[in-house]
Length: 603
Image (cartoon, rainbow, N blue to C red; front, side, top):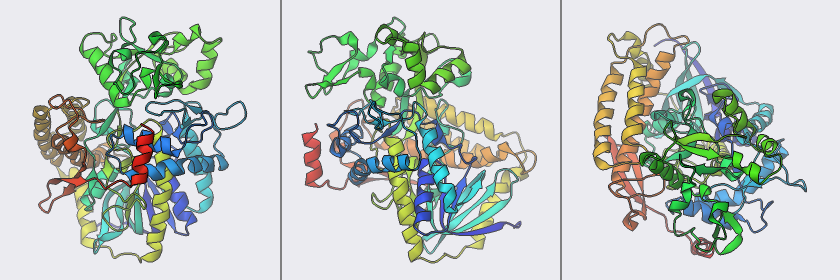
């Protein structure tokens, strides 16, 4: 073995987005010596790309909002497969987490009387998203970093974790390397929090940044933790379509929340063609005004463009497939039309959506205040992830916690927009708090040197190989496979084909060759990412095959309807003794009667 540097901490947090930083703040406040490992630079986590806002029932715009309505909306959006305890805690605690962020210096948009402004968003009954224009995630990261730097955190930037280490069944730390120089590092810790985000880079068209290579999910799985709800991948309905260099970059739901409408090539607002019966109201005054009424309450007006993301994404796909799409394979998102209703509309749009205005102007030379945008579905969010306890966020491996997108439970079959940012705050805090408590109650575990040596050997194998296989080519093929065969619409034959291709890609990845040396070597980094991407892609596909129905973010052509036989359990994946993927069905925990009543009262 080569020499490597050893670091010792009470709590090790892998990931420096919203969940990781909030966990670090809480762990440090709990008296734990805390370290944060980030694959990128501090301040460049994917959270900065979150635009729409933080969902929290502050009731600043509509006084009828409260945690019970938020809880009911979240459960309904998740098709009742959510971990009800997480949904309850999230709805109750999100307002305090937002106010806490404000107290730490976050500069939210304001109502006329000075309170935090909230906007409409898909699936939320009332205006609920506290926002900073369309740069909410950036403000969140800035605030958490500014607050966290005073707490004495150790930060390891541009480091990748190769494996988690265990001692007698519980977590003992992690082993990885620095991406700049290729030096190995051993991190001993009493507790580890995974906050690594999603799996978007397994797909060809995605809004996710380059870091999203399923690291946390794969690390936890190989360490013996269970993964849950992995069939539920959210395709955001509106990503940039043209030019090709920007395909997939997110166009925030805030554009539709501020009045943007979806039209096909004929100029028709096609979302009116497919409003679910739950939302449809035949007595709306004027359909083309864009409003439908819910609960018979004319003050709860909702445009059909703000139905749940899975529904809107499938409607867009239908328009394209049936020949009514835009010239480049999407549809048109038009916010310029509001100039018919609002004086100085161009300035209003620039003020409310500054990032969107500059994104389209600088990247595509399109002025969204004057002309429509071309948009289409893009892989956006993973509802599934590491199976955790709702209160503590600890996985089935003692001492291993998870929070944010890499953890499962809160969102069920489909996430409501804005719930991701409040998820980061609520469960990042809880993960950090309970990791610190676990660290106080336990000593450092022993490190198995043979396990470390094996991890080092595996990481360096690509340098010793010869042949034509290229890790980039393997990744591109995997992305095409997942996009085409396990994408927004699925069927059994295609997913079985995907499994065959994934198996072939695993063999190709074992032959992938890396040229050059360990310093500044992106090819090497890609060869290591492949291991995680292939692991999780297989689990997504096997989980999707197991769920023979359509629900939330999982839609099957061969089983297009919901099947209530599948409404009573979550699909869980574990690593079997033989090394394969073991898929089981785990019954939902019974919901307390008081929460059932809340849902009934808010239907």
